[in-house]
Length: 606
Image (cartoon, rainbow, N blue to C red; front, side, top):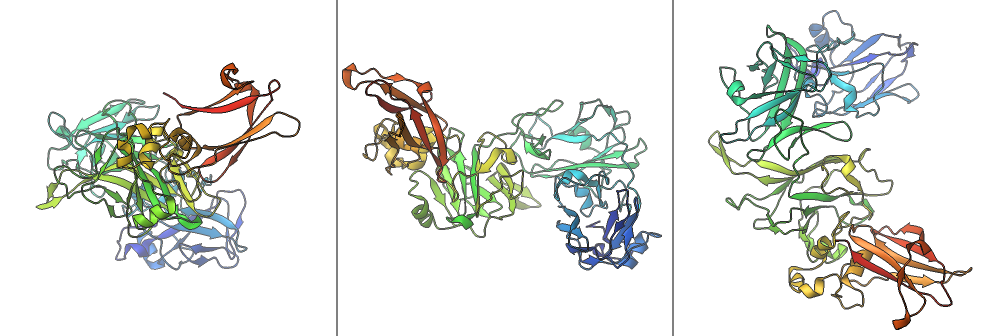
């Protein structure tokens, strides 16, 4: 019980407790076992816990016994459990880990345990969580104030969820809430409550006799839940929403389900979305689906494409953005130009008057733009902004790219709602990409994938980041990053077949081999190894998705030569990552005839 409510004449912090349970078949010797992370406590000699037995240690014995009359405490610990979440571990006398949990006070951890009267309990005490931060192994207690030193009552209730919420509408649309029954049995929800306040659950009462069929949906709109003395409205600026189980007499029966959402564009609903990890998020949907299965999340016009959050390998911390919309995107409210886009989590507000063009990247960095360009190259077409105050958290945090909505009046004051365009909730633990080297930079591998999903990300090909390069990029994106606006006016010089920097290498070659269009790279080498045949090495960028490589052979040059593509007569025998976003490929083939010639051809996929 990490955040109990105050009561019985004591502050909430004095009413904390930690319960230990032996789910095994043998007694456990706790002599000298200790907590040293989160709270401090050492078990005295001869302490043991029999199979199926509970024990409780507390913050304040007098406070605990006042609230939980008749329940014995095995000791008082020093310190307090963090209401925001922390790591708590129990070790045996030799220092071996017995149990650890790294709980949090926000979704997907049960928020009912965060000051709302419930404790945090294992769903199945006989099973160890898969990881210390495995939220799915925990739930809020069935009983108010928990059930210390005794088994947790089971919840024999069909667990309906809040599945979609429409909060920002103009007539003829009205705000609405959709419930979903993901189970295989009918859910009788007559008498249940919906509320926008956990501490005041009995607001809108679902009519008696209401039910949700297996895998079915139940929709109620503000015409129903917004009337009467206990009616409420949905806040278009964002708020929490709760569902509470109750019997037909209105008595709460222990189950609750809560969601939280932010501001949204007019007519855009939020829906429950399941990540690859099994966690759920309420996200803006690409279309409203009230009464039916949710569709994919709405994809913002600008996405976060790279985060270099731990620059201990060298270079400078930054966040890279990419305009994937195909249109110019103004980074401010057209009607209120002083209200600009921002990155929440960095406390960075974009300067006024900026527009990001199609395929253009922006980099927001911790240092002056001139310092950044000196280190990473000119990046002629990339908008480099900064510096921002503070630093990205190396352990992970939520980064939200947000745009301003129209100002509103709240309690007589002007309020500017901000709408999430793209959100990344990265961390330094699996399933997020984990670096085995110094530093950590992650790149988005799926530009149309959901930014909060770890499956959309991978470690960067470059240890110190790769601004100006994006996984699966096209020639158009590369051209926009490495040529200035003035350069792009010279259309004939920036097409793939031209040689902008006049170094003898076409723009397409420099793109395909990891160049910038302004820097000459050694791209191809040929040798004749012992035993005959030939070997050819070529540097190839790992980022493009639209480059086609072709190997051609001929037995003569000039008019008499006939070039043929012979894919099967040359194979890549080695691939070596170079650590800079490219790889070195060595091809090996047989000499054909008395004299053979070969060439490497490049083209772009249509």
